[in-house]
Length: 305
Image (cartoon, rainbow, N blue to C red; front, side, top):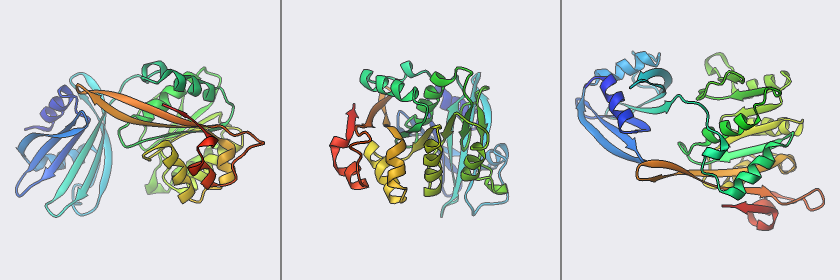
């Protein structure tokens, strides 16, 4: 089966991911639909892997190292951005595609937010500075939520910068940047450069290490509104992650404004995000004194479900 046919079927079946799994002399193709992997076709030509490498501008001669890339494709009259990941296994190269339909950014009132949490988010968005974290698993919709927040703030009076790898939603009014590790343009270097660009709002696609987290907090401390995503299993786990990175506690407790956690629930094959969140309950006179206070003493947080 041709690659174009596989992509068309994936769109029709509302697949979010496609897996090309190596077997003895061919590949089998799996679709992730409603959060579960389903076998689509048992046999397909291994030549498809080279086709995908060409489309993602990857090295056709390399079959031992991990490779990552992306490409855009029009499928059934819909524009898709497709991420490509290739890893070498004992049986051959395993390929995973993430299908991201290019569409207009969502607004907050379309995200299925609980009323009390929506109110808290709107209050967090009117702050001049602070750190707003959205955490959850891969594919939970964290970037969609953050772009909905940016959309609420995009009134033409603020300079909005983003660091994403890759950029998922192209918005004309934002200054969107992708790290280029091949030429040593890292997220940290981009973030440092942003600070000299007079930004109002900064979005960091993912906090992946201690240095980026420290710089994000430093940006929030110096009067900027900073949004970022983090992989964690709960809102409190995001605080545990900061502790494991040895992020300065007093700096974090000074800037954290809201931690939102979301996961994706599928009902009759329709994706519905489920949200919860925590908001600091302390003030300058009752500030927590350690990470232990934040992770073990619930009185320091307001909880929203």
